[in-house]
Image (cartoon, rainbow, N blue to C red; front, top):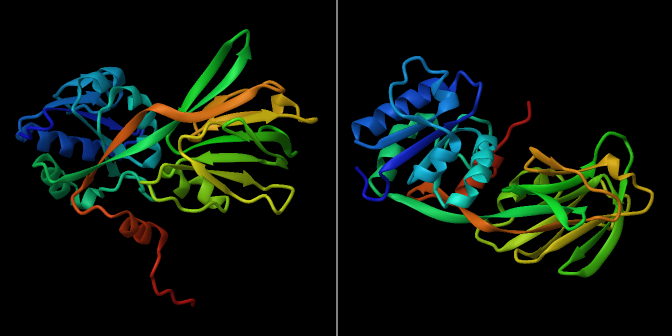
Length: 296
């Protein structure tokens, strides 16, 4: 048994029958090595042959030294947000598409996992964002993002108008379909599709990427990771046609002239990678760099 990890939690993509075999394989490896195992109870209920421990996601967060996430990047994003306050490291097994965050494939899972459990791994810290929207009377609603906070039009094919402030300094008023505020982790996601730059995950920086801006001179802007960003919906934009979405999942609603406040979250995420993990190797593999393509 690893001296670093003793209790290991298992999370997986819900309602996906393909995760069952991988979960059972993981359970066998961990049981044979003497680890205490906690599988999320919603997944355990789907596996007739699961005979080991199960728990709620909150119990897993509070009682695990390591959480293994089985699924795609979206599954790990969800796990990261739910584990943010507990300082528990996450390890991803990729059953999704690209796998920027879940970087262990099922094909080499056994070898990679055993090496990690033997203490041969690398750990990195990734920061999160917190988005807050005032609700009047001093109250507010908030949500957490690992990839990005997106302010976007909602239910009509019409641009929105908004003001942008960085650390209280006015940047600009723009009309666009929206604005993506991404962490270095999120720079390979929606922000990249919107024409934003790739940020090294070690950078303490944020990138603001306009979505289909009306003024073509509006370009992505990189700011410091400790900057606090405020967005104010203005002009003739109906606030009911605007949403604030975190990681493509949780949504907030803003009223006219209310500030949407985005800042670095108080907690960060600890990611576990196999020894020798290299971000540029990952980019080459996932984005197809340096490949010789033949058009037929």
